[in-house]
Amino acid sequence: MVYQFIKGIQWKVLTPTCIVCGELGNKTLDLCLSCRQALVFNARFCKRCALPLEVEAAELCGSCLRRPPRFIASYCAFEYGYPIAQLVRTLKYGHSLSHAQVLGTLLSDYLLQHHQNEWPKYILPVPLSIERYRQRGFNQAIELGRVLESKLSVPMNTNLIERVRHTVEQAGLSRRERHKNLRNAFIVIDQPVPEHIAIVDDVVTTGSTVNEIARTLIRAGVKKIEVWAIARAPLR
Ligand SMILES: [Zn+2]
Ligand SMILES: [Zn+2]
Image 1 (cartoon, rainbow, N blue to C red):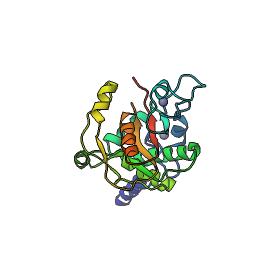
Image 2 (image 1 turned 90 degrees about the vertical axis):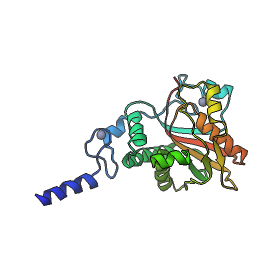
Image 3 (image 1 turned 180 degrees about the horizontal axis):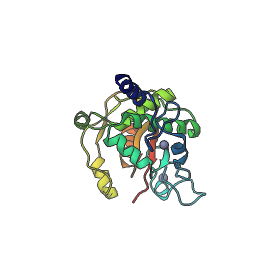
Image 4 (image 1 turned 45 degrees about the horizontal axis):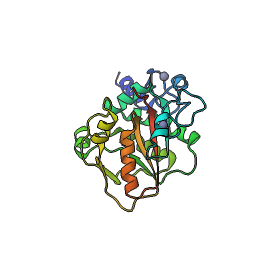
């Protein structure tokens, strides 16, 4: 009885279990092969901000043509839909490290396949304010950064910038309100800054947060900034 119980725990702990369907995972990853094959990659997207595009031949979205962001490229692996949206929510609100492991691995595989030119000097996870980080004890961007760091051998830097104030949720705000909400929310706390950085976040929605971080970094002397995320949510 005790033996079976211990065996059961070992099975649970050591056997990869798919975080989508609960079946047996694949090799060491908590994701089974059929769920992995069912994931929808971001196939046609703006090279600058990763927004899914309707027009096949277009390179950039209307927004990037009108007002180019401060970063030069975005790599967002998936369209924001089932099951990615649910997985990201569990990562973020359920503080699930197995979700960080799976999503970080998928993003690093995507980057290994699609990333062009040289790797950045650092991975920079979008920071929470110190207050909020203490309160939550978990920042999903850092957990994704840890996985990317080990898979890609690009070091993560969590000491380069700090979020100096809380901001309200960006979704639902107008462009002007988003701008005001984020203005000077970040400061650079370490010098000298490297030339090339990748900002990492779970999901890019409006792009305002990563753009404000990029603006802050450029003012401090960073030359080249890219954005890496699990998914790019379409603007509503
Ligand atoms: Zn599955
Ligand atoms: Zn764009």
